[in-house]
Image (cartoon, rainbow, N blue to C red; front, top):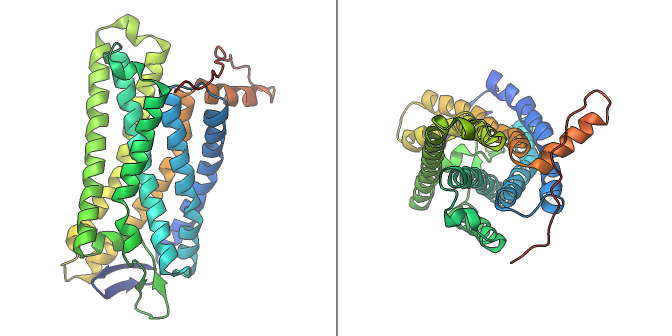
Length: 324
């Protein structure tokens, strides 16, 4: 069921091709995303050496896992054509989705900025942060994104459809809510993404400009991997996150429109864009592979154990005790 709502009125459309395609897309996002991120949590949490990049990747994996944990309830809602878990859990589900989407964006941004300083300004204090400082940065990010998403826990989000017996709990309700608190929340949500995207773009351009005339630096293995990381993050931001924010931005201003058909179209596009957000969690193992020697070697060892490949492993990094 595709919908949109302005104040207390609901536009409802019968199940369409878009709606029927959502379920397999969401299931595929879950199947592809959960194993790779759980593996990342285990390796980065217990096997990989303690350094800033791995700590940021660990938190990115945590955000992805928590995002995917909320996904089965979205799938159930699409299958049933309504929400059966009540308003409190609708709020919690929205809260988990929104917090971990913002956290994923934040930790990818911090990872890119960290790479920027290590390549362009290798002697900057950022490159020599203690583990304690890195952990504090990660904790600060979580505190900020959780605090900014608190309005979702305080606002009733379940809506009635055209059939009063069917309740809806859909993300686009957040964007079409006209209450002042949610308007402020939505504005901050868009500003967060705009700042993150700008930082990623500027850092990427500066790194590429810095290595352009330095052949020795450009051909260094780690620098090459960094370029791949930058390209991957830019693609994820553009393909997985940007459509969702653009559609939300349109929904943000369409609540005064009188045409129900335009509301339904925005609802359809928003539903598809949300699948792309979940797809980001399925693609993040690419970042772990490019950024973490431990993660990369584990995959190589698994591949070599089949006897079909003979990948050369990197020099083993041993975990040292934490120094705070």
